[in-house]
Image (cartoon, rainbow, N blue to C red):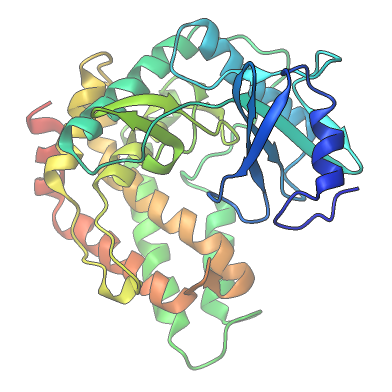
Length: 344
């Protein structure tokens, strides 16, 4: 039935929509965002608008998807701004047909991140609000606990890149970059551990808090998306990831041209927004700079070790950019700490 490609076939769409009680379908519109291997359709019916998604191959494990849905439904019941999960006629939130996994959500209006400081501050505040809700979340099984912090997997990917095996060609300069990144990663891991990471309580966290996973209306978060990375971890892992993602300065199209520095105003605004509702404590705040180094290394090395690329970007260019940014944080710790702590 499904071609497994980037688009729904007409036969596939008819069969899948028939599993949902969403009213008379007036039209379907293609939504060209996110993973190209995971096609999406806006479904317009006489009962409203819905979003249908077919998961990419390898991303459709029923327990993983079911856990993400349970997190989303819990937050919806708390009145938190998430899209409602739509069940099938058989009252399942996960639909498996012809070897593929489908899910349906209520379609949520809103725009993308407008780069405003007000939106950054509200994103921090909404993360704190989510963390406070998750204190009361109880699930029926043990979710993933692995994080980007002090990870043997990250070190293994760096070793592979440094050895210039697999997709990497000898003599292109991979090894010295991998060695320095590993040194920075190890130092940051040791610093965070010394601040008490092992003693900080675990709970459910979002795991992928960045501007692309939320919608905004008038400088406020109107909907939080994508709970596939939800896991058990200290809340500071989420806070540090959000602080990085909302303050990182990128550019287009070549990562060679991306500057090293962070946007200090946005870094301060994100953490200050979080602290309006939830106070992490001095040790956690002091760990954010080092955790940001760990995040950048961890997110870059897995795809590059496997393919030599980060998406469509040159893996070597991307690693050089990551190294510049990690060096900048390492060389400007007083500035970074002041932005994080000084005005919170």
